[in-house]
Amino acid sequence: MKKFLCYSCSTLLLCSGSTFAIDRVDIGGFGTVTGASTFNDKKPFRDYRDDDIDFKPESLFGLQVRADLKEGLSGTAQIVARGSEDWDAEFEWGYLTYIVNSTWTVKGGRFRTPFFQYSDVVDVGYAYHWIRPPVSVYAPLFKNLDGLNLTHSTDLWELVSTVNLFYGKVNKRVDFPGGSSTSVDLSHLFGGSWGLSGDWFSLRFSYFQAEASFPFAPAFLMLASPPPGAPSLSTEAVNAASIDQDDAYFASISLRIDYDNFFAVAEITKSDVEDTIFTNPLAYYVSAGYTIGDFTPHITYENFDPDAQYELLEKEPAGPTRDAFAAAIEQTEEDFQVYTIGVRYDFHRSAAIKFDYSYYDYKVEDGVTRVDAPLYSISANFVF
Image (cartoon, rainbow, N blue to C red; front, side, top):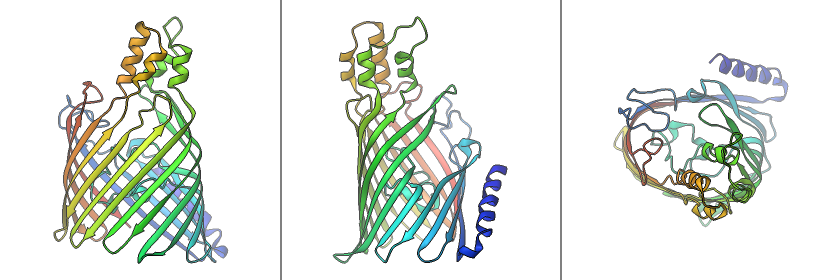
């Protein structure tokens, strides 16, 4: 928290030191305090490993500063401190925006990847009805993009049309159990999204492609780069399985309907990295709810359907190493479904309390990371 305050004060000092060029500075923020547990240490789920309620993994606090530099130019910075990262504050956004005219806007710097329906507000729990967006779709790896974004907004067929075109790259550090780490890279990333919204619905399409370099999971690392004297995969198998500047594609479609007090939202995504160990998952969810006064009960079904690349076994001769390779591929077969019911209570105009019950159902359990388990969650979300 001390680091967070230091970052915040530095930002404000920089802004105040340039007041001659700034017309207005807006400061806002958001926060989430989330506690969850399976209440069964024999059924762990991700960061919730025992029968105690843990408030650290998903709690966060964010601060956003926007400076209006006059004549259509503005600068935005966002700092977020996460419990999962020991509350170390980090500048997650930092970009300049230039409003060319009433229809065209240009943005450059580091900003949220515009891949999903809730991309811009994925960290702002107050902005949606769940405690957490569906985990099958909202994978945590790629949140921010370094690059340029061009936005065009206009009226079309009595609808509001918004087109985003973007180019840049993504670099994300990934930590593995045991202390090792590596990075995930998407270079030459380009794509776009198109949103159409009317009185009672919004429809969104997105697509991007890039050159991807992903790390091996630990099980593959032990086979591709084993200790001295240990058996290793053949060069042909390693080359076939590796993800090193391979072509990657992503596409999504989402639809949201709001009619009186009823709402429904659905989203489907497909990812693909050609001829590699990547499982090319298809993921989707459907959610609906109804607002009754200050309460919003809701229900959600989601599905994650990867395709384990067993054909890579053809690159490895029969033997113990091939058997270990098959076991490592089997670990990528993480097919699961999630059923969620919950309620949101807006007890304040800027804050809400939520209760969610989710049941995670894996197609194949392994007793370690893939375990059918319930997850009970409570969360307080606020904005200011």
